[in-house]
Structures are given as C-alpha cells and as structure tokens.
Length: 92
Image (cartoon, rainbow, N blue to C red; front, side, top):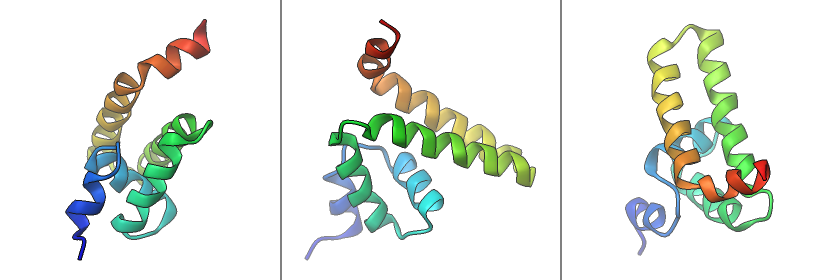
C-alpha cells in the first residue's frame, strides 16, 4: 500500500507546492499530489501551478495572514526557479 509520502515522492513538486494546490482546490494532499503530477506534465500545467500559488498568496493577503503570504512567496520563488526554462521560453 502506498503512503502519502510515497504519493508525494512520485510527483515532481515540493511538499509546499503540493500543499498550495491542496489549499487552493480544497482537496487532501494525496489528491493534490496527483493533480500536481498531472499538471507538471501538461502543456499549460506550469503556469497553472504558478497561478494557483499566486491565488493562494492573494487569499492569504486578503485574510491578513502575513506569515502565510511570506511562506507562499517563498514557495512561488522556488517553483519559478525550478522551472525557469519554461519562463525563459515565454520571455524569448
């Protein structure tokens, strides 16, 4: 039987990125891991994950949760840095 850690390990996203997807979609981490694995390989998946994280930042900001805003900003910076080849193609 697969554990949640096994499921997360099969995805090419960090645990924090998976948690951001889970929060945005209101789903458990296991489902968010599957969503992340699908999105990361779909043609528009990387910008969709980026948008999800940005949406989460905006939601945390509206709630006044500055600690969550900082955490999610770090998640966003890490995500963009790990997928910079995608974003470089966009700017070219």
